[in-house]
Amino acid sequence: MTSNNPIDAPLALFGGQPVIADPLPPVVTMGEDDIAAASDVIRSGVLSGYIGAPGEAFMGGPRVRAFEAQAAEYFGVRHAIAVNSWTSGLVAAVGAIGIEPGDEIITTPWTMAATATAILHWCGIPVFADIDRDTFNIDPASVERQIGPRTRAVIAVDIFGQSADMVALRDVCTRHGLKLLGDCAQAPGAKVFDRMAGSLCDIGGYSLNYHKHIHCGEGGVIVTDDERYARRLALIRNHAEAVVQGERPADLANMLGFNFRMGEIEAAIASVQLGKLAPRVAARQRAAAQLDAGLAGLPGLKTPRVAVGNTHAYYIYGLQLDVSALGLPRARLIEALKAEGVPGLVGSYQNLHLLPMFRHKVAYGTGGFPWASPYCERTIHYGPGQCPVAEQLHAQSFLGLALGQFAHGPEQIAQVIAAFHKVWGQLDRLRPAPGALATAAVPMAATATQAASAQRRPAGATA
Picture 1 (cartoon, rainbow, N blue to C red):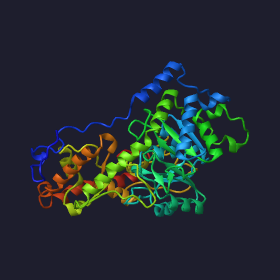
Picture 2 (cartoon, helix red, strand yellow):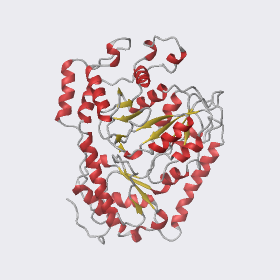
Picture 3 (tube, one colour):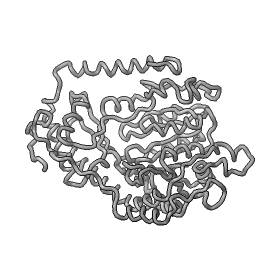
Picture 4 (spheres, helix red, strand yellow):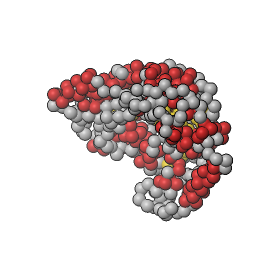
């Protein structure tokens, strides 16, 4: 049961009754149709149709090929290539564009690590650009400032469910002769001027892992309109070196293939799930609209902005806090909201350029390869101060609601809104004693100083 406590009722943090007394139910993503599709595959006895050799089976079994055709039509592209994970898809995409060791690819720090490690996989150099404060996506102006002689591509990440500024990014890439890749893991079904997110890139794609909008356990699908890229993607997916018959270096480049193959059970489930994508995105959009209206006017809280021409798939409903105006650290607000039963709270997000692997430049072995090699033609710096917008959001002001972690119908969203109002109605009770907030900020500053010091240590040194 849900409490109808007025705003002035005691906060749950201090022993009061929580607004959401019982945990909100989870989102149900699997149905009888998914079970039937998986059962049909098992009864067929063919769980994978791939052979890593020339021939029709090189492209996979019938359900993989059917899902790829369905995905190509759904996302409005000429080619879709199914893979066993979106991480595999990113590795394949970077390889398919033909980068050389030491080539640089610019991306955002505000993403999952696989976006950048896919670059390192081919001995490329990740370069991080800052993000736009309103959309959390990569900032095209920052991208342009990071371009160097060895820059070959940009990987835009459609973080939280809406696309990056594809018009501006395409303009930057065209003027500098760069490829544009799209990591749309969190944005399947989002649109940019009536085009599907991911379809405006040279190569784009989506994640199908268990907590995404649609899923088959683990999986991904790559999309492109380019025939050559589609062929190279399919080769990298399935033991390319055993299949490529060409003799020219250009044909052989990056044709170190893998087993990135999606099985028939996963493909069958993914096909059913794809048919559910549109209503699921619409449900999240309705929940976001209700949150927008219900949270409007709360001081020091900024609701998400959807860029002109975009729609948003709301993998995460991203808020921003003005901690100075509130006089409260984010951790205290999260503590109070959690006590009121608010689920799916995300208190910060990744900043890849601050991770130890990048700060110490240790990837292959302990000698700093590929940074400390003849392939790397300029010094690339990682660490505090490189992406100030992303760093400030990560450290202080970002607050997200992961809508996929709980049922988000009108009744549930109303309860979440009521919990926010209850907490915001008693901010004075949550505020620390004068001077405490400034004191609490000292460890953060110290951490940044330590990180900067660590950046100056030689590769392989310990903190």
